[in-house]
Length: 338
Image (cartoon, rainbow, N blue to C red; front, side, top):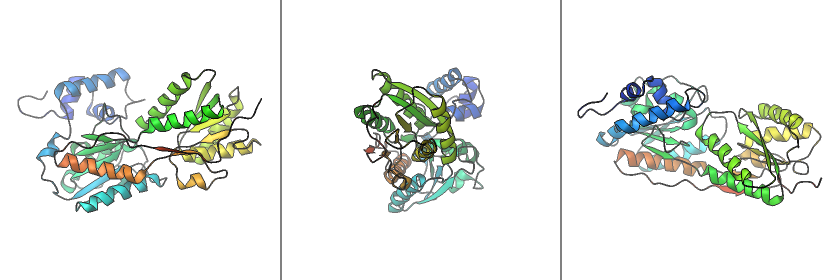
């Protein structure tokens, strides 16, 4: 246990909670689901609170601009979204004389090797997507001033969190479809254990539970078009009553749903409405164009960098989630009368 004036470490938290340091990183990095029990996760959080453990308190004692380099850790660059996050972060960094190194986790959402001989010597801080939180252990990014993106603010590993208002995005989608008259829904969920996708599922369930006469089924798929097509086809073959609307966690999932619907001889939106989330370039490349929620990736990156600069300077980062916007296009319409 930490004693005297020594700041508590992740090892102290692990000892207090009776778990490994790896478990502490998983819990405080919001990557524990499916890996440790909810009881264990709560025990780790309680130990961290009791000890006053904050990995980034040392940031206030660092000389701002020691290397003037920040690491942005993201999942593998499979969409342009994280490219936008980088663009926004680099823009703010340049205004303050900093550079941003982009580090996509080689395995997408798994562990990663340290790209530096010593990350602590090479970097002033880290901005990391919660979807790539496992990579932080490999580079020991949790020992540096850290800002988490898309992370649970009540149990984040970082000194600050920056989030998009994903819950409101789901509310906007759901209200739009309910307003069109839809009552039978399929949720095509991203098969990724991450806080941001938990928020989508939870908000969707809450919203539809409050709407009389609705049904909701869930199918899961990796964020890849072919896997999404297979998951959608399987769901449509087994779910009764058939959904009149498919709510997808991501635009790429929606593109897979389109392919499944068409292979069944059905049409979007005449037979089934489809929605996405992200507003990628893909959303206007498919036909009909996709109703989706626009996430401002560049603003997301800007806010992440601004938060890290605040941490480095000992200031309190700006609070409040970043607003999102429903964009209604041709993939949604009232359900066909029975």
